[in-house]
Image 1 (cartoon, rainbow, N blue to C red):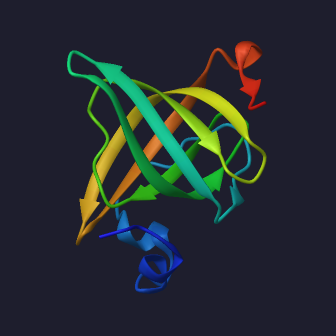
Image 2: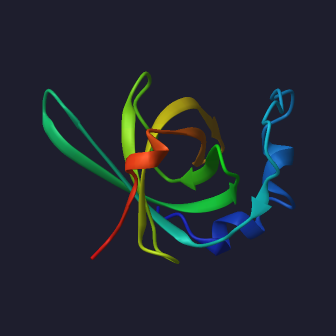
Length: 116
């Protein structure tokens, strides 16, 4: 299953899919709906997941995908809308139905780059 806006329409508001999640961001969140590419390296090599940005703030973003992200992993995230590449730490990954919802916290923001 590919994760896209059609999948999100089945959930009235994506936050309702995450009951009880503690909302403790220090910066304001903004809704977004653009595609993201997430990749990381592990003992098996590089892995990539395509997803959709659900919301974003100065400190991180929430994404939806059809595949889970590995626990305790640092990942790279490329935002399709701007081409920006961010380095992030996975804070949580929860499955709801066939979708996975992940919270990513940006790290090393001063070294983030824009795709060429």
